[in-house]
Length: 162
Ligand SMILES: NC(=O)c1ccc[n+]([C@@H]2O[C@H](COP(=O)([O-])OP(=O)(O)OC[C@H]3O[C@@H](n4cnc5c(N)ncnc54)[C@H](OP(=O)(O)O)[C@@H]3O)[C@@H](O)[C@H]2O)c1
Image (tube, rainbow, N blue to C red):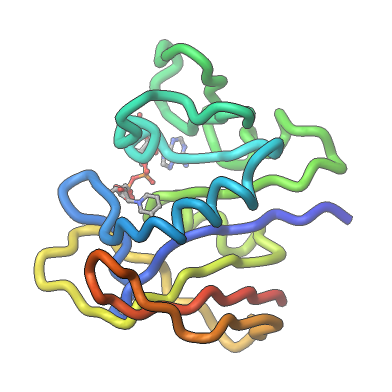
């Protein structure tokens, strides 16, 4: 069965975003995001797509969920719902749900796996949060704590499955 994977970098208070941008810019996290998602369809909300400085991410099908039927941008496909976005992908393709808050919330019941970067930090001015997740998720892999050389923030890469 294919994996539907939620991938996110999340603070201790579940913060993921601030002023339309990522809450955390950690170089090793961005590299891991790229290596895990490369070659696979990525599904995102319209606001997350618009936060990318260079537009569509290369090497992956970029599927943007929006209620605006006329929305378009180079290198993307659009879908009117998360379910419609999933149905654009092949039934045996592993897909990644890459945010933001609205889309993670809707994806939670559909996802089979989560790849989370858990950052040991709280943020006063966050405006977007990851949904709370319940005990039906179990950690199957967790890295040693890592330290971001730029910010000094510590974080772990954690894999969860149902
Ligand atoms: N830390 C991380 O890993 C991470 C990852 C991704 C994003 N983020 C951050 O999260 C923030 C953005 O998240 P967000 O929650 O504000 O927005 P979002 O989930 O990226 O996008 C929301 C938009 O998606 C569309 N949408 C949502 N549900 C829909 C539905 N059921 N049917 C059709 N369209 C639907 C709507 O687009 P229209 O308004 O066009 O209809 C809605 O305005 C940014 O700050 C971003 O940097 C963080």
